[in-house]
Every structure is written in structure tokens, then in C-alpha cells.
Length: 343
Image (tube, rainbow, N blue to C red; front, side):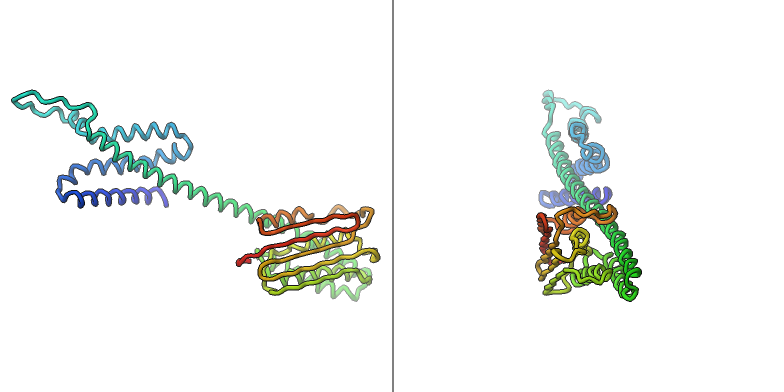
């Protein structure tokens, strides 16, 4: 609600209050005539609040200046419509014969009434302005936070895609050198993976079945580069394939396991992946062997588990549990995600 609309709202509100008082107390026209100045000055002080004191002083936390200016404004307006002020401006009434008139009090009751009425209008308008300002700031904070979250999520996803393409092209290159018969199948698999990354992953959430298909394609791409039978075991039990999950959420764990699991050795190596899901949760678990001696891996590549942790905090705040167990010869990750009706 902009300033003009708020000003019109206050004007109509106090007009309704004065009309109600007029109808309930008396229908004499002189009541309206006597109180018209009070109404007009009420509108004046409210306008001054909306257009100056609130935005220039109150909302900038200049509280002392706000109080001083507001009090001066209300006192002046109350004095303007008081009987004493009108007597000073218009001059004393003509003297009448008889006993001398009694002296008027310095602070007539009319001034106090005017001051009280104007103060009530000003304070109520201040409460309204403060409430609307706080609501607007909260909406801006939420909007900025959402924009920041979306920007960070896009950045995190952009870190995933180049790494995926880099690894996949390396696998295709290995296929073309070692076994040309598997190259065509590898290209077809890569095509499916690229389609998923470029199109499906643009959505904030995807069906869990498609995420699992991507994991299967990734593993298929990995195993195609060699004639070995890798010790990889998968188990997927999905009660509802349409359950929604954030895209590319599990693949960093798979990449990490394949990179550090030393599966090329075959013996004493293993990789186990399981996903269990129903309408209320997703349980992901991956465990892989690790060599006693650290492997010399290239420095280019993995986005790291920190990326996944950030995404989980952004996408599933207080709705996930991530447990990482690192032993001498094994590495295990357990991820539990609680789902709501929107996912």
C-alpha cells in the first residue's frame, strides 16, 4: 500500500469516526461546524506523519527527533483550534457593562481535549505505519533470501554439470581406444545422461525414478570402459516412482565412491548403493572400500561433499540427516530425507 492510499485510508477512517460521533451525540449542524477544525488538523498531522516524520525520522531510527517533532506538531495544532488561540487572534470580545469578567485559565480544557484527540490519531497512525513498514521489510527479507538461495543453488548445480561432462567424455575416449564396439553404446548412454542434466535438472525437483536412472547410466558408463566385472551392487526399492527429489543430489556420493574406492583392483574392493523410499521419506546409503594407502588422484574433478551439504541445507533444512563414517578400509554415507506433501 503506497503513501497516498494509506493517507486516504486514515482520512476515511477518521471521517467515519466523526460522523458516528455526530449521529450518536447530536444531529445539530453546529456540532459539525465546531469539530470540523479538529478533523482537518487530524488529517494534517496524519499526513505529516506519513509523508515526513515516519520515513525521515522514525524508520531511520531517529527516535528522539521523531518524538520532539511529533510533540511540537501536535501542541501547535491543538493550540490553533483552542479557544485561547482564537481569542488571541480575534482579539478580546467587546466589554460588557457590569462586573469584570473572570480571568480565563492558562490551559483551557478545550486545549487538552484537542491535544488528546490529535495524539490518539497520531499514535494510531504511527502504529499502522510501523506495522506496514515491518511487514514490507519482512517481505523484502524473504524475497532477497529466496533470490539468494536460488542463485546459490544454480551455482552449485553449475559446478556439477561441467564435472559430469568431463568424466563422461573421458570414459567415451577410453572406450574408443580400448573397445570400439562399446563406443556406440557409450554415446547413447551419454546422450541420455546429457538430456537429463540439460533439461530435467532445470526443474527444482524431479521424479526419484529419473534420478535413479541417471545413477544407473553413470554406473553403466563407468563399467563400459573396461571388460572387468566391477564389484558393484545396487538395490533400489521405490514404493512410488513419482516421489520428488532434488536433481543430482546423490551422484556426488557415487562419483566420490568410484574415485576413491579403488574398484580397479577388483579383489578386496566393493561398492554398495541402496535407495529405499516411500511417500514420506528417502533413505540413501552408499558404502565403498578404501585402500589402506591413499590413491594419487588427479586434482581436477570432484565437486566434493561440501557441495552436497550446502544443497541439503538449502533444499531440506531440518528435514535431512547426513551421516558419514570413515574407517580404515571403508567409507559409508547414510542420508535420510524427510518429505512433505510438496515433494
